Image (cartoon, rainbow, N blue to C red; front, side):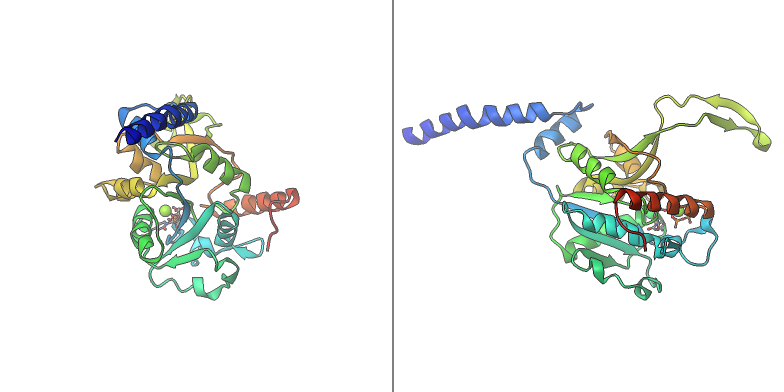
Length: 285
Ligand code: CTP
Ligand code: MG
């Protein structure tokens, strides 16, 4: 008994201060008690990273019969570049793609290059958030994914995400209690329109950021956030997490990680991809 007591005292004396010190050194600024308790719960764990790509949209603003994720960009479908960047990351264990049920385009392409990491679901929903929630629900049937593992949700139509941006996101958030997203401070002056597209007033852009993806949250937190009423119409994952009273971290990105929404975005994305190729990020098609 005495031996056990001595052992316990020496363990508390040696290990705990080191652990506490390590925790405090890495401790980010947290806003709420809820965030504090999440930090201490997660801090000493080894969580895995997964990526989830919602790819069940139709691209209505692109005005093309083909869903925009399959449109050609520098000789390959747009989604190819997204898969390549995420599958190449040695940190990411698996990449889930969520397609629309009955998607007839996916099988027309050869994805064998990614077969080691790629898992395909055909359970897309009516909104982006529904597609993500359906993908999250399907994931544990095919792979062991823990509640504390990280999920990086990345749009199928952001093909210019660089390895540097991806690594920065994971590095800055790996010990974070809440998670966060890539984002860019707004650069343009903001006008609020009134009737007939006339300026009503100029809005301050102070403190305003444009959200991008990947958005990185722990599996259980993301499931909880997206399962709440009202979350299915939210256009990003962070909004659903914010509705839980949490404050996702904004990780500084840049405009090169653009989302292809309108036809003219294709031209810009191709220029960026070719410039990245010159810098050695990877080859185009
Ligand atoms: N998405 C999805 N399921 C939906 C709607 C969107 O998986 N029901 C995906 C898209 O495929 C895309 C990402 O969410 O990868 C971002 O959405 P967005 O740019 O809005 O794409 P679309 O919804 O396809 O385009 P639009 O809004 O112009 O119709
Ligand atoms: Mg949409």
